[in-house]
Amino acid sequence: MVRCPQCGGVLDLEEDEVEEGELLSCPECEVELEVISVSPVQVNALTDEDEESSDGDAEDEEKEKEEEEEEEDE
Image 1 (cartoon, rainbow, N blue to C red):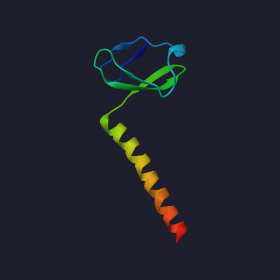
Image 2: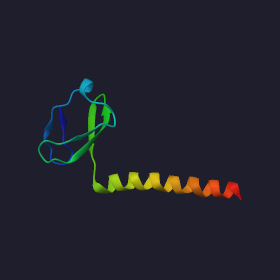
Image 3: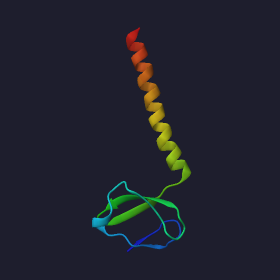
């Protein structure tokens, strides 16, 4: 039995029904959840900070690559 880490509500999830990294939402509190393990099934609540930090990391990496390419061209 899997419970929502936010509200404790029961989530009806089976190992063969989900994939690691899959995004779901809790039917009770509607928080966005990420499947972090499938055997056993475990979920982690995503916050706005989690989503922003992952987006920010990708943007930072792109900027670093562009700067490196510019240095190489010089």
